Amino acid sequence: MGKNEILNLEYTALNLRRNILRLIRAGESGHVGGALSSVEILTALYFNLLKIDPKKPDWPQRDRFVLSAGHKCLVLYAALAERGFFDKSVLDTYGALDSRVPGHPNMHKLPGVETNTGALGHGLSIAGGMSLGLKLDKSDSKVFVVMGDGELAEGSNWEAASAAAMHKLDKLIVFVDRNKLQISGPTVEVMSYEPLEERWRSFGWGVRTIDGHNLETIIDTVNQTPFTKGKPSVIIADTLKSKGLSFAEGKVSYHYWKAKPQELEQAEKDLDVMEKLLKTKMEEIEL
Ligand SMILES: Cc1ncc(C[n+]2csc(CCOP(=O)(O)OP(=O)(O)O)c2C)c(N)n1
Ligand SMILES: [Mg+2]
Image (cartoon, rainbow, N blue to C red):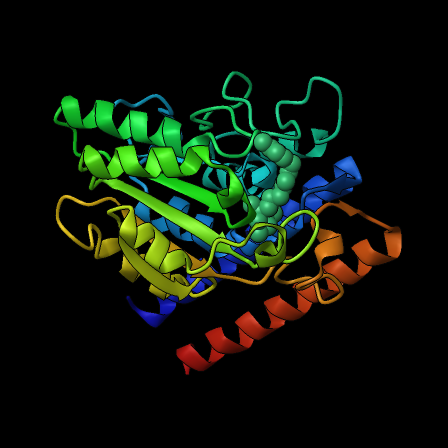
């Protein structure tokens, strides 16, 4: 990929973070930590990898995206709005009664949402079913899933992982957002999943571990799927929870953020600094 192309995607990632802040401003609170750690993954998907058409959200040939960890919905709303699935003014209704962007994604309210999620541990089963259906239809469409690392404590995931391997769903691509934290503490202390890579491998999946904030790496890695022909693929994305907010990064207490006005101000400043850095990078490229 060209440097310019990557930088443009980095700008898009910044816009997603700005959209997330806009949602938080409207609702005054939300699951911000896991939304911010997945920003680069959703940027890569919605602005490079997914075969989609915002004007035709039900286009049968589209790729599917399932946000299994539905509480991360702020990042999904941010990406869908930025990609043009709906007007950005909808983001300002977050937290309001009957909002189209509720606390967990609802496919009946918003175009681009493939399925309802929020009860952890269901997305992979749904995505596996979608992928099997597409395979039976001889479709080329891929199914992508984003899961949380804490979510992997749900036993249903491992049943779904076995079924996907048995059915040789090699167009099924899962990201585990390994930000190492879940709701109440470090993931390995609440319910350890380690050794994660070996665990997925033993379930019959192709596995890679990457830096989940590096857009170029995310795209290159997806473009190498299936890592093994006939096997589903999982990408363990190492990330930082609340990435981008100086006062919240890596802190479990920002899993769900009840935003104080001073914190919102600081958050805006943090994103302005990010924008300045990107501008400098852009000038260096143009020289
Ligand atoms: C079945 C179920 N149990 C509990 C919860 C409450 N809950 C919401 S988020 C969360 C922690 C998820 O952690 P992780 O998957 O690591 O997400 P992230 O760190 O990306 O926010 C829990 C336990 C839920 N949504 N569903
Ligand atoms: Mg986590």
